[in-house]
Length: 99
Image (cartoon, rainbow, N blue to C red):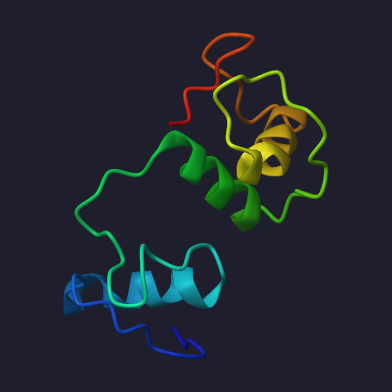
């Protein structure tokens, strides 16, 4: 697997570096900071939704209002695309469970 650049995250061991570099290279994530990926943090449901929408190459440009009161605006397009593709829904009609 080839990547454009190697990320320099201090918390990523050699075991996970190729997977993390691929995520960064494909612009799925940037990590928490320039030097920290967040390898020991839990992935939030909202972040997983954004990753899946990007991986599936869904149109995430539709950022009209979302019915989910807990959803940050940065995720609106991804969650709407996943919902329209019948891949993901909220935990309730008004709560996504993303935070």
